[in-house]
Amino acid sequence: MVSQTAEYALRAIVYLAYERDTPSTTTEISLAIDAPSSYLAKVMKRLNRAGIVDSKRGLRGGYWLTRDPDELTILEVVNAVDAFQRIERCPLGKPAHTSGLCPLHRRMDNVIAAAERRLDATTFGDIVEEPGLPCSLPCVVEPINPL
Image (cartoon, rainbow, N blue to C red; front, side, top):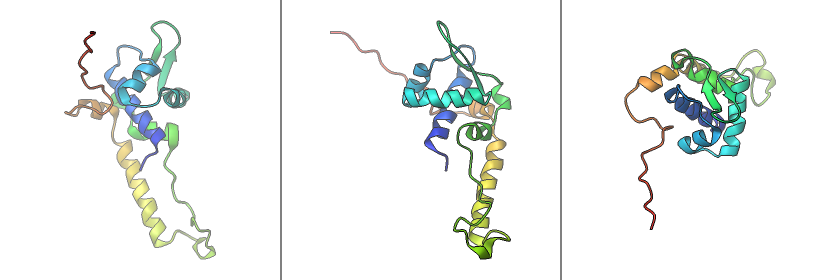
């Protein structure tokens, strides 16, 4: 339903929602959410341009959320990196469908609209408060014992 780009963005925002007190580097985020660092850097730039995250270069630099997770919706993040494509006209270009969508594409667009409404009603605060281990936090890894 969402692109890989949106998936990485969502997981990165969940991670940052848990790490509110300290900036996180692209490398830290990519390791935590299992995303390629170079690709995640591009995703984070999009989120930065959208005003969802801010960043600082250098020592103690990284990314952080610009807003409280309780005020940031899943839809805002998806729209910042790869918005849903609504069906506004017949994808086949059929002249008979110029006055409106056919029943199939009208229903498909209704599903997209319903998904947008649901994602707009869900904040990252909701995600953080929900019980269970989030997908974007690293699992505990046992240290490697040197030989």
